[in-house]
Length: 602
Image (cartoon, rainbow, N blue to C red; front, side, top):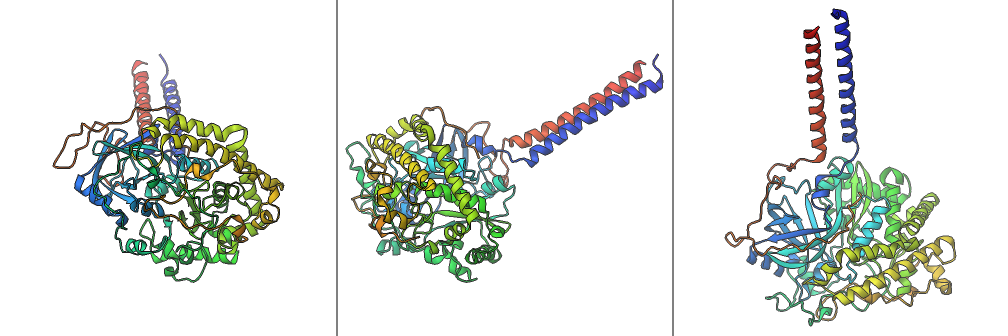
């Protein structure tokens, strides 16, 4: 018989082993808590090859929303996303220039925002606050935004999740869209661990002027002729009414509203009303105290002192590298001074990418040579460098300029070299080609799409060649240098920008952007799941009717709608925590039972 002392030793050893295992599990659990993890909606929304979005809305309300799109007013709808239903969400048209262009045409292919908690407080879709559906107006390639956000992601920018979406409305195909996670609380929680930061959507309060824009400021719909019926998008339809401007436009663009209202990020005073392009577009109901944090940063930028105290310098330089590479002039880089987000967190500002359907020379970009050779060291158009302090003040610092050049070089070597850019486009074509061919509301024909992606490959590779030359000194990298030595520029005569689509809405009543002249008029100045397959197109014709509002299909995995910021099933992180706790408890129970058996036997 084993002595009592030995029994106690055996029991102590078993208990010690259990405690060590429990501690290991606890540490592992703590590690998972402190390390960023993918939110549940990363899989449930953006984890599929093509995101299916089926919208069910009262038909009269839907048509009224379309007829008054410039008002950007929400209506209630139900949606099914990738087969999972959520009820009573808000949906509305969205956009700025693109919204006006569609409203002024015969098309109803608007971009949309789907806000899950508009009518049900605290409702999310597996943690996602808002889903954005962009119509890709002016982009015959269907890829400008996807490629740009993918480049931003590869450069280390915390981009929103993104992908492609097939959209139906009341059981009928509506169109093929580019889908994004909105910058909202769920984004802030994902990248910063809490939602205490402030987001500002910087955009021009004025667009192109004229009677329609005055009406738009009052929330009235611009004139667009008879809109009682949805246009016919058959192959015989003249699609020039719905595509981007076929004239190209010139490199440039004077002040269009945002430059003089804060969008240029120039410090003017401590009065928040001087920065209406920023503060009138707060995503979170910001306060005067929040405004002053941004103004303090702009004041530091103006002086060129303590920049790193107020700005995430590394993130912004990475952003500027990609932004410059893709030549988007409907942005901070021109007089438009819009289409980017400011994310202020703990007094430090980041610049977040947004709205790139007019990138790659789609907006006021002049000749193909202007786009291919857009100067990396004076990357502005229609304005002086001094009017864009986020660029000029950063570039005045030699260390920052060297970092910017390094990120440009990494982008060229990593995203374009050895045929990588063309391969990426081919992969996307394999993913979306059939959807584009069957896009019922397309701005472009399938033949034009095929032509566009070939032109995109050529443009991208020539742009990378020019950037590489500008970095090694064989191609001038400033506006003045390019004027003086035009013979050193990369030959871009083989590229026709019109093949890729460009800003505006064409010949039939759309709003064309002004011609701005060419280069010679310029002043000085989280990893997404890979989409490899092609799922079948969703159908919705069998949805039952319920008082004019088609009811939504349900299943056992439908997320909880009414608990503030809670969703079912729980996130994978919560499941891990539960497993750690249960495992630890089980081990303790087993240890105690084992010890008791040992004592009883001996």
